[in-house]
Length: 276
Ligand code: PEP
Ligand code: MN
Image 1 (spheres, rainbow, N blue to C red):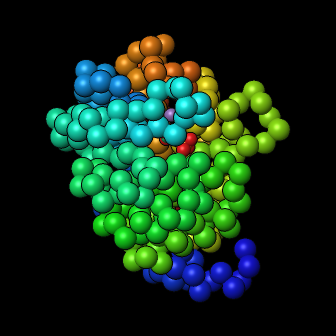
Image 2 (cartoon, rainbow, N blue to C red):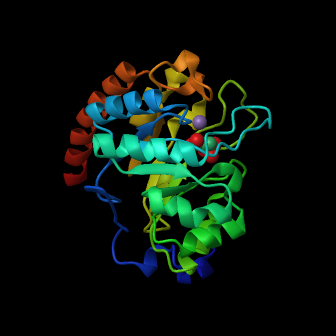
Image 3 (tube, rainbow, N blue to C red):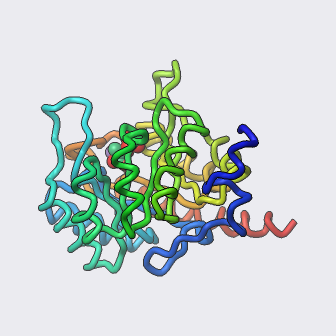
């Protein structure tokens, strides 16, 4: 990183200690936080059942997409406003804050009335009008890494949000495109300690979109925690084989619960390691 970047708001030098973003009863940047839920809100039953399952397993934030940026315009595009109403209802029912993706700057003000965290997806990382509008919002912003983006480009997109006056940016590594095609993307775990050496902002990992494969979620989630990630975002579906979007990478609730147990054990070990 160019030393000239040290004066930017994201830089380590600009903040005393790591940024800590309170959401619900946890603090992102201090506590290890797992966000989980379906790729897309499909209907009330699916969302409600998934919310109960992830809450039971120990997730602290409920995720769910209502505006889906799909590769094909003929694929399920999300339920929009109706989906957000369902997600809010499910979050309230289980007592979890909700995170959902925004794709259009015009939606930010009203979505921010319902959602606790605004997600900006990989395809929109450099959508500067979306970043600026999110910077005017009072809600924390979860900024995913662009699939073709460098760490510097990503941090500069966080800067767009910070520069508008919103200090609460959470970075999310979700894999980048490489020549490898046996996984959906290539998870860049080195991004976590790399970012921690450059910025005070929390950084979480999304092993679901990074790999696209259910069998790889657990090892990558554990590796993310071991690499110092501040949290995870994981897709969970009550019936992954029936999911309208990303079923192949979604964990069924029992598998998610098993992963959460392993994360708790590893977390204890990580705390011991910090003392050494
Ligand atoms: C998502 O989290 O639903 C999503 C679309 O992720 P990404 O932007 O990382 O592809
Ligand atoms: Mn998805």
